[in-house]
Image 1 (tube, rainbow, N blue to C red):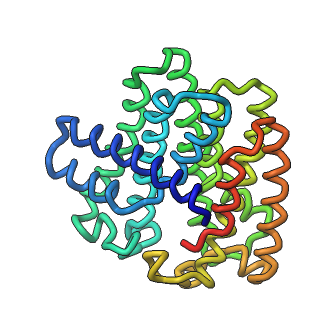
Image 2 (tube, rainbow, N blue to C red):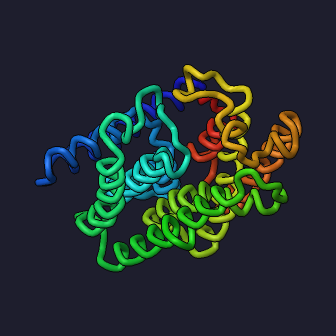
Image 3 (cartoon, rainbow, N blue to C red):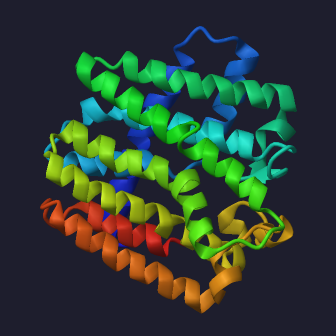
Length: 294
């Protein structure tokens, strides 16, 4: 990773972390619940989704003060989904980002409620944003609830669980990941572009880029589950195989998965160029996401 991108990611990550910590800490939340929420918030996430949102907003000349509460709301949704994903009833994981999962650190009931609290607090965060209009807040809450709920991430999570141990088509696998992973990534780019003032045509191009990025992100995750570094990943390599999940490498092989990913990267860059945002950090971030090692 070049130094300019490294500095950009570090600066934006610090902004997101500070806002998250200040916002949650400042709320009169029950201490035991707040402790569990902050445990997973502080678990060392890369904040890629909020950073992508900020980069999209900046690409269209938007203001960081306007986009930051929405970026933080998205990270709350992402964190809640990880807490619930790790539960025994779902992926039954003991480690997340190199430390015990929330339900192992505390207990299952506390982890479930911490996830519930982060989910609902995310919408409160948007509604309390000082630099957004009422119209913007309604649009963003509608889009985020759609992306994260029964028509988006939650549906993808259930489809993923239902497919375990079953032979499914590549088309079905991509639909799972479009919903489970892609919808929140798509929201990140779309919300950033919307707040930044993108036109309807530009938003359409950004949506195409975002949908492709969701697939790219998942293919790379699958590749890392086969060939990644366990210490960097913060969880055991090979967990997908252990859980009998259908993955790109299991269907296409490792080399075939890399080829498929590169095909989508080229398409994502092409659609991003159609949004007419110039050589922005979004191009660099797509490269980074598609070649990250953890």
